Length: 225
Image 1 (cartoon, one colour):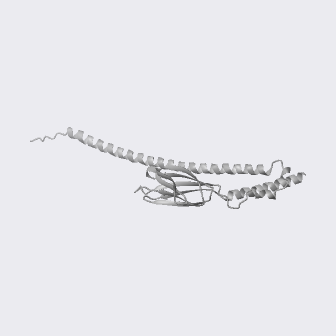
Image 2 (cartoon, one colour):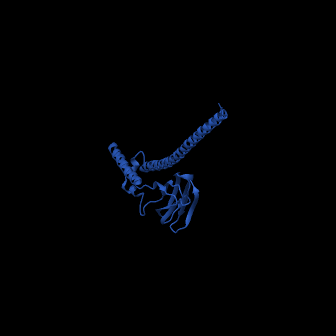
Image 3 (cartoon, helix red, strand yellow):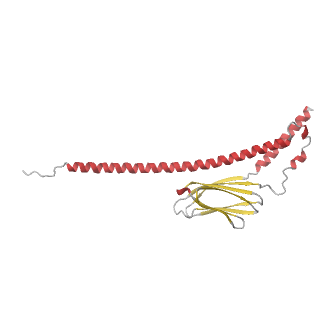
């Protein structure tokens, strides 16, 4: 009896690992960082399915003003969301079949380029005809286990969801950190520039004052012999 229990436990763990690998093999999250030149507009496309969900989060990491124009359009060309000169934003839409287009526009800036980070989170993107419960047909005798295989799968799915959420949060925090670092470095350069300017002005004013004071005490009268 103990041998049978051990074999069933081993078989359930192997099936669970196979299912977990299959679940992780299809990543539904992606992120990208790119440079948007001044006076340019860049557009990206994402193919979606009906009754799925698409979430787009973007941030301007570097560039004068830390702002950009953003728009999200449906497969029919209808503009779903439009942001004007914002530094970040999050938009979620229930999708239909087709290619969704989202654009970043820096045409209002004639000099400064922008570094932009965005992340896509897609839910309910299972393949057509996929049967997530088919694995149960190959499992027999699970009532002999202390823990049911369904409980194991629920635990694995819960861990997977939490790991995915942790990765998303870490990615967003890295983007915030990069933007804050760029702001700090820009402020540091500005402080150094104005400090040097003030120092030069102070030295120049000091020299002028010394010259004026010395000229007040000079005897300009000529002695005749």
